[in-house]
Image (cartoon, rainbow over all chains, first blue to last red; front, side, top):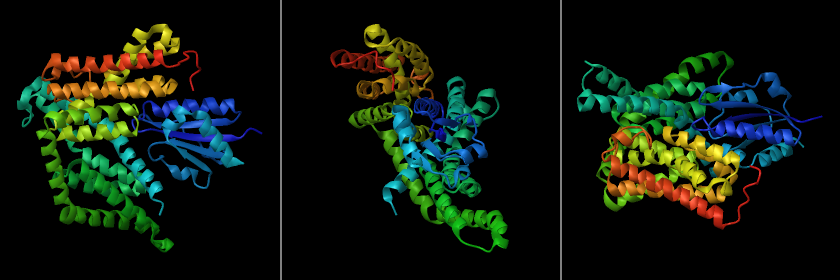
Length: 104
Length: 345
């Protein structure tokens, strides 16, 4: 069964890194055969908000953030990989691989 | 305690504060700039015409910078209960004239105090009393008094000293500072280091340190403009079709002042692009500081041209930065091995 991942991305200005990191996570998760849903917390506020059941079902959570995640208590008790947005923009595969390692 | 982890957390808290501050600064900065540009210097103490009122809006916003910084650093540390006390004490810090530094300190103190108060065990019957009354009351009282009786005056003295130093800066020091700010603005294209320089420049701007704010604001547009020029000069020999397309949007981003327009190039070829944009931006800003041109608006690179103290020299400084960046990156791409067909990341 495909592993399920959820992710939150957020950068400082909330206009570029947030969305590029989200795209990269989706791209490489798909390549590696994982299901992923990404919530962005950018300048326009929270978009594609993760529902509590989506978070519940996820095997692992990725925070690709430079700021504090809003409502982070939603993710209490989950396995969380925390990285900066620019690392994910540079190398999305590494983030996905590392997150996958947390599951096994 | 793990110091490295703590440092990273602290950086995250500061960055959260800055991220909430950015729209405030752009709104207030633009309003104030427009008021001063069209209304002249007599806008400051009146609200009898539209420019005076525009100034009122902008100036009120600028005065809110320490408040927003304090509130959202505290929010980042302690979540929702951190907000209210930091708003109150942050406003006091602002009216005491402690500036940006005071706001940051208030945010940290309130945030960690509230976070600590939250952890004190209490009987379940008292939890609602604790979150509704005890935490906001104690946090405001304690940090407020610390500010007023202990740290307020020293911070104010530091802010005044720093401002005087910035305003009085000339010659080699001014050039070096501009070069440093330019390099910091370019290095991560809108990332954390860029925002440190941005926060410093805006803090200088609000207290009249226009040399620093001019350098910082000039740096915003140079990286994308330089990459635009590089794609025009380099053409299909050095750039993929997608990159030439990115070059066109980089032109627009450069004009309106979004450094992030450079990111697609830096992701595809960081080793050649990032040093080039640092060098180009740094030299452009340093050249401008050497000329001694300043602009007293919060507008970025291109849009500030009409308001600079010397339009021609200011424009020349931008062009020097842009051209050096473009030539350097194309030189590096041409004379070191580069395969334009490489799929992006």
